[in-house]
Image (cartoon, rainbow, N blue to C red):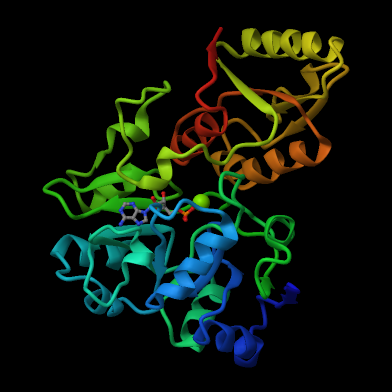
Length: 351
Ligand code: AMP
Ligand code: MG
């Protein structure tokens, strides 16, 4: 299959920019498109065959459910059995935006979309390209991140092309995404609202609306502990990972940089291809190594925006070993470290 890349000018969007993409979606085909979080691989959420195509294109395990994207809050009552008051309050505050809610699903949402669960994940994106595509197509769009399963999520159309060229008919290229990390997922099906995946919307922000929100234990774990099972099936899998072996170092920054330099030098001396994941403050401390900065240590948003693209750059370089710094867990830093720890397979060394 030939994959067409269709550029759109997000400053001057026109309805007919999306005519072909909307038609493909209505016909049960797949279209990758930008959202404010990462690029999504979209298909008609109410068409089980479209959902199956999404799993096949990504190579995604079929028990890992998809997020359904909507353009109007009233869609909640069409997709969810009951919409608790808490859901309306979160929607009011955070939609459109990078927050996903888990609710009990209605029968019209196929099992193929929810991985067999009786719940459904729903999000209303703020990106104008995503919003216009949903409106124009007239379908609810099931869209997981548009990467091959296990790889870092795509933050540009090039990343999508790298993973899915030949597997899907169309990619809408709206440039680089703004946030760079997936949405915050909040489960509203139990007594206590639970964060299943941290994202750009922090737990502190959620608590301004729902004071009792708590983290699912799997979100805050820092070790590879098989007894703590993530409630979001997708968070159980090896994920976000570069091809090389990533190890991250935690502790006093001087000690961390010295140790990263030593470990990286040792592997390089053995003939391996090595890269260092650094910050603006530390990048010049490393010598004789391939170093990339993802941003300032106190600029969590910058680190979030550059993390996945940098991991992909290491893959393109053929890095076999990657040594990296940990980042402060303030605000979005929580989500950054969640992805980084998973990408490292919880290889975290305290120094
Ligand atoms: P992605 O496709 O990369 O955006 O990932 C979607 C995430 O949402 C995965 O981690 C899924 O496991 C999670 N998810 C989707 N639907 C549900 C659901 N009904 N219950 C729990 N987690 C869900
Ligand atoms: Mg994903």
